[in-house]
Image 1 (cartoon, rainbow over the protein chains, first blue to last red):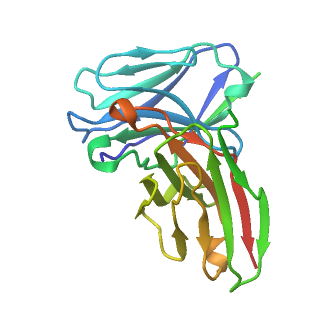
Image 2 (cartoon, rainbow over the protein chains, first blue to last red; image 1 turned 60 degrees about the horizontal axis):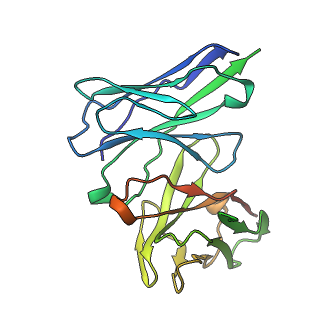
Image 3 (tube, one colour; image 1 turned 30 degrees about the horizontal axis):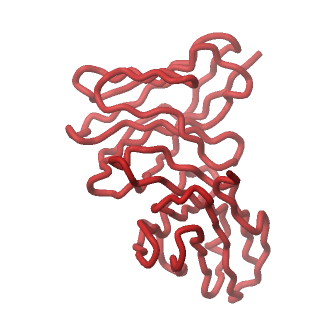
Length: 112
Length: 115
C-alpha cells in the first residue's frame, strides 16, 4: 500500500471550511484513498473514501487530483466537535484484505 | 445494533500476568482486527481475521494470540504481559461482502497498563 504524508497539525476557525491535505505520490491505479478521524482517544471513525472521482457525503467532501497523487478532505463548516486527528490512508483491498495502515495523521484544532 | 463492543475498558496487569481482551460485534461482519495505539502514534495492526477459523498476523503480532471460533467474537490474548504492551487496544470489524470497499467500525478501546 502506498504511503501518505500529512501535515502534523492545522487550525481552523469555527464555521469556516477546514481543508486537510494529503500527499500519496506512489498510489497505484487500484488503490483507494480513505479518511478516518479519531476524536480524543475514541475509536477511529470512518469519514469518506474515493478512487479517482470527487466524493461527497453528509460529513465531508473528498477532492482527488487528476493524477491521484494528492487529495484534500474538506469539512465545509467546521465545528468544535470536529477537533480530532484526521488520518489519510491508501488501501488496496485486493492485497491487504482491509488492513488499515495508520500514520500519525493531522491534528485539527477548531477554534471559536 | 450495539456495533463493536470491547471489555474491559481499563485494565492494570503486573509483568508476567496473562489476560484476554474481549471484542464482539453484532453486524455479522466477516473481517475483524486488533490494533494497538501508543501515545502520540497512529494505530498499528496486531492480528486480523477474515472469517471464523481464519486468523493472520499484522504488523506487531509478537506477544499476542488470537482465535476466531465464531463470527461475532475475536478475543486477544496476552500470554505474558510486559511493560512494552502498555497501550490502548482497539478492535474493528468490516463487512467484506460486495467488493470489500466498506468502512471499518471501531470499538471504544481497552486501556491497558502493565506494571
